[in-house]
Image 1: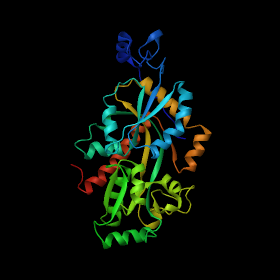
Image 2: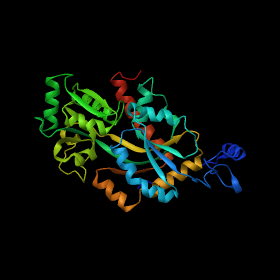
Image 3: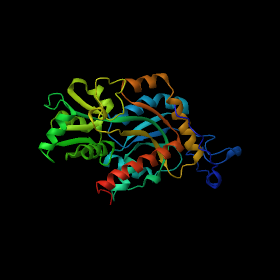
Image 4: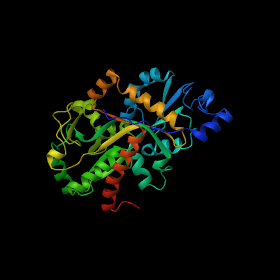
Length: 334
């Protein structure tokens, strides 16, 4: 497990102001009552875990696995709700306008929160507007075709794409998302031109594949086991084969250095006091150590991650550099 460094900071003037007005922490949790920080009495009421994607996708599955344990650790009910749209952009835009008290936190994904503000004029937020609390899992990209497809291997896929430039469609979850950039990476590395078709989430992308509306899906590793014999996984974007998916070859072993996917965590508005952020981060770290959750992650091909607030920023900067390099070469950066 990666070590989590303490996100050390003093609430300072923010806490003083909250204490003076009595509006901190949503229900008395803010301010410096009794000399403590804003998190001393947080939380004192129900929390809302908002997902900016459709129900049924990887973010939803993860949140459902976390929900009961998270409520136990925080001592309050945790309600899950959904605000899909724009590959997550609608929700993240609204998050920037929510009260910065910690009572509403939202699922946030890399590379989505990097790519959308970088490439869309209408994203409605900037990466820095979201204060990342914790990154708790990742899912590598995986290229899937219907089980009855003539495509058996990655070489078959590339050959078909070269024979019909621009004609093959690859669906995925969201615009300017991990699935989207994974498709761009494959186009770049293999010298092909397939058309990426975005859906509002995995929950809508999968039916499009099974219904024959797209030729393939750039999805995530959990879909391989969830869809079973309905699909054929022709490549997964990891350095080595995943222990839970030993029969699925990697892009790397098939001659293409494509190693990428989505990192999932939660974020809050940027003005949320640091000690409340840390209390939430501590809760997610504790949940990530629950044996039942760890087993469930492994069984569903999620990769357990532990990035606290500072580490999440570092990872974001690292991935941003990779994506900027690719998109600049593809002349896609405005």
